[in-house]
Amino acid sequence: MAEIVWTESALRELEDIADYIAVVNKKAAGRMISSVMQRVSHLKDFPESGRFPPETDSRLYRELVITPIRLFYRYSDNRVFIVHIMRAERELRQYLLS
Image 1 (cartoon, helix red, strand yellow):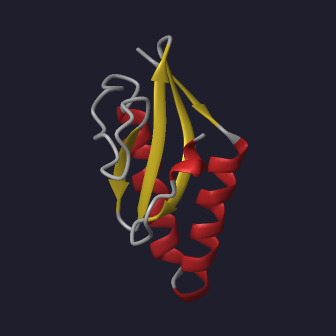
Image 2 (cartoon, rainbow, N blue to C red; image 1 turned 90 degrees about the vertical axis):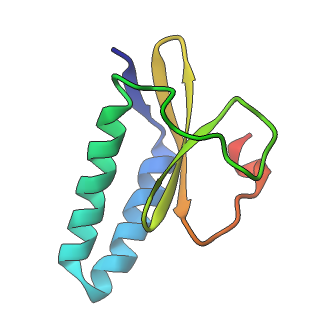
Image 3 (tube, rainbow, N blue to C red; image 1 turned 45 degrees about the horizontal axis):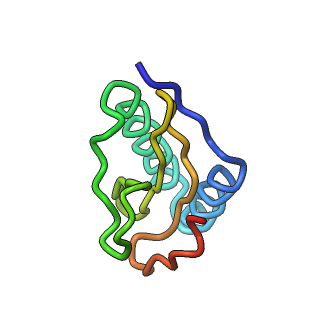
C-alpha cells in the first residue's frame, strides 16, 4: 500500500478551487472535495492507475481527471506525491510540474 503525500501547493490549489465553487454552491464544493479525497485514497492501492498527461512526453507524472479538476501526481518509492491541481479546462504548462 502506497503512502499519500500532499504538497502544500497542491492543497492550496484545491482549497482555492473549492472556495471559488463555494461562492455559488457550497454543497457542490463539498462534493468536489469528497470526490477528490475518495479518488486519491484509491491511489494507495492502485498508484499507477492515473493516465499520463497528454501535454507532456514525460512518464514521470500521472494525472486523475476529477471534474472540474485535474490532479497531477508522481509515484516513487511506494509514495504518491500529489504535486499540482488545476481546473480541468485549462491547459497544463509543463513548468508547473518541474
